[in-house]
Image 1: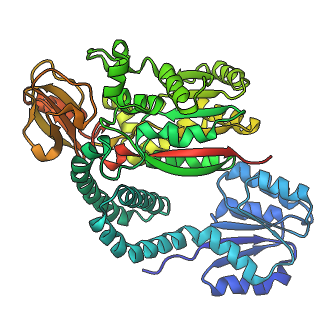
Image 2 (image 1 turned 45 degrees about the vertical axis):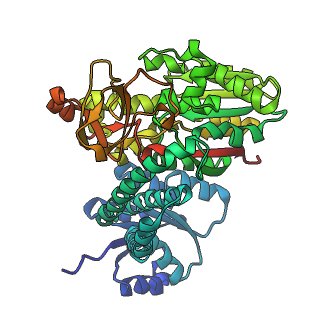
Image 3 (image 1 turned 180 degrees about the vertical axis):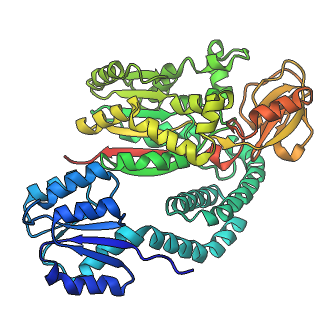
Length: 522
């Protein structure tokens, strides 16, 4: 079936001089109506919808800007291109302020007008076709790359490219190819899990070829930024790479962004990965040096109570001096002004590090499993990204970063771990003293019905965890599995399937962004 021609209304008191332009558009398949004054144009617009309006700014009678003002009141979403002889900034500012799609200065050629019309009316479909063609051309090589990847950098590059393709296809409306990308992501996730099971115990023993891990971030990224000026160390808890991609454009106008990645240590959960960021130590090293901090409590929430001291100790080790540290953990944006005031005060201390942990993304991810409303709002990864961006735009975190850019402060921004959209339950058999986590479990005589769904070891040193009681088994879930007990199989499956969880082994949880932000000159 032949599609209906896009309808264009051209309003200009000298429309007779524009006949070549009208014919040029008509020859390209557009339906064009021409009107010589604003009042008749408004009357016509009330009777017939148009896809685009070309509006002359200087006309006898009702001028173009007045027509635009009335049009906006009647149809706020009408697409308008302002055409004028004036090159004054005031005219352009007024038109842009009323949200015109574009702005043309006479004299214009038919080709210029066609270019603007095509971009506005056909741009999305052209981009969709181009993206589909680009992906189709890249897909065979990307599939081969996924099959051959065998290094930390290779997995990171392949994962990042798949995330970028997913975002681009989704943004340009080419949703028909998303299943292909997700199939490649699933295959990569499978290979990644088996590779981590083999390599991770070697990494934490100092063997093999380890990537930058949580324990390395402060030494490799933060320490080189230290000097006479204050530095902000910002951790957005539980942020995936795709969530970072959704907020990064908001920062690019304020900072020069140097993006990288690091691998979260296992388990990819706050008590382990975030402590490693602040201390530069593995959990067994923290427990050995500070047994009164770690203890043997199963209450993991208490294990992150000493991040300021851990960071201060690490910076003293890295620099050989006491670095002033101001630390804040922000759970809510209700007291944004007080947080900003304290950060500005702390940043007035020369050579200081202002460390800030923002927990909203983690709280949202956890709360999603418990709230039917939040589950509906953040029903998939795309919705979770949108919710993350919406929060960030209005957050204390963004306000603090804007203040930092205005004052010329450098920022190291990262996260402790990501999360994975879980779909498959894996049954575990455990005693009552086993840890309750859904993506990792420690316990005596602990075993899983599906050995292929988890890293399983009896050696705490394979994960650099403090030794547990004799007979302890350590399980860390692979891919998108989550642990359930046979006695509560249906309850847990119904409750947690389709949840975003963390603590396990997947690219989404382990390969996480780290960015150095340097303020742009003003």
